Amino acid sequence: MILFYISKRNKILDTNFTNDNTLSTHIMIQVNIKIIVYLIKVQNFYAFLQEVSTLYDEFDGDVENDPKNSTYDLLCSQHISSLNENVIKHKNFCKKLMRNLGHYSDKPELHSFTSESCNILNYWIYNSMKKHSIPEKIINKIFGEYSYMLAKSRNTISGCSYHSYDEIYEDPMIAIMLNIFNTYIGDVRNALMDKALSTSIPGHKFVCDCVKIYKNMKFIYCPNELPKDHSHQKICADFNTFKGIYTSYLYGKSGLIKKIPSLYNIENEYSNMCGEYEETYVKTKLEALNVPVVSSSDGDNEDTAHETSSPMSADVETRNNPISSTVSTSLGAVAGASSVLALLYKVNK
Image 1: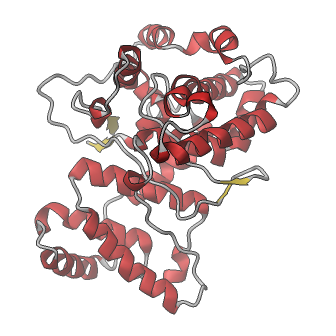
Image 2 (image 1 turned 180 degrees about the horizontal axis):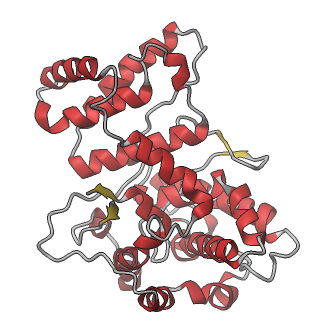
């Protein structure tokens, strides 16, 4: 069984905000994660995003039965020792990363990446790094070997590059949800327009979660449509990308205008079109279904993942849509965005 946890010591709270309302918004997501968390896996609430969860689980799968396990074991012991790091603590992650990249496979060409699978691999890497305190130099060393293999392949293998969001974003948590929104915009649109309520309602909630991030956070990072400072240029570009995709591929479609809020009248329309998906409503529904809620006490010691990672390229080929765009988003700061974020807060039991 896969459960999702978030600790009260989550790094989200480390962000320096002077506005009490902004800080409250950041704290709310931690509560909301515990309420919505079972909708992802146990209830299969976002079935149209199942590819993200399924591939993530494959990347995190056990490596002991892999034919190359002994090779991974030896190489990881050597690499980690040479970096003066704890071999026992970090070897399992090292072996999984080698397996996932495939550069020691007998048929590395079978490990070619799409932009989507590279995205998800990076989510897994970043989540693992934060959950298990993996030193980034281990990741860089493995990717260095992987890059050497790719160079020898003479571009016959579609590779995946490692990008750390820590180098790009002040709050990397905000990066994943709009990335997923952009990549799976075709699936999101189809879900919204589906006649079956079991599909259209989750699609509607997902869109509302993304809009809430835009509504609550854009003004913090990009007041007056401009980056607050140099470090916010990328996130402001991402918000603009979301705005363009949302307006062109969702709000501009007949049949959806009355279902989702306009980003040009967001304050007035959000509560009318998305209010039913707020925390109290979802909590009431969960209680009616007798769905348990994961809790985390002050004394919890669970490892938590709280940041994610980016795709290999800024030019992301989107799935089921004609767009190619620069995307990375921001997720950890807005209550309501937790449903998809929970995909990355995985602890195997």
